[in-house]
Length: 206
Image (tube, rainbow, N blue to C red):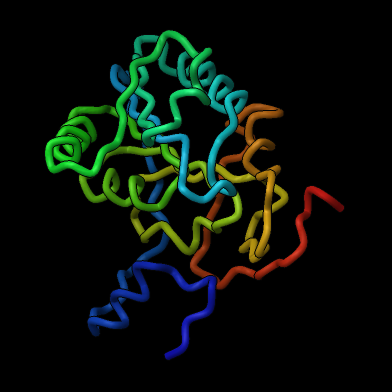
């Protein structure tokens, strides 16, 4: 079986291992009403999936308004510190390649009440541990990343509903920035199990 770019990652694994597909559709995700500890992973090695400093400030303000008792921890790659130097009222965790840093991050995910991320890897980890999460999606369609019954609430620009962005070059992720222009809540995404369309031109530059 040949998989297109739009194939769901979980479905690929099930097909390879000969496992049955889950029954039922998307389950409603209920976020906790009271949140004390939020882990935020705002950067990816792919620039198209990384938030800007302005995006992070808007995200943190939205989280604080929605969960006033919460304290956020920004999880950063080495060298990302300069991108958030002017952001206060948060704690920081720096990823590392040592076993100790990996275990510390795993412990922090287990102890948090909410995980917010832009990259599939950390979102998969939090989801596997049963942690409610917010997934901020740009070019990647949530349909390709999230499993049926996922604990992650996806957010994505309304212009990209049902579309997988197949741009080969994207120096500026306009679709991610759009999430914070009119309020994040307005961009809650409704994924489906149907294949999404691939697009090679940016809808935000038309």
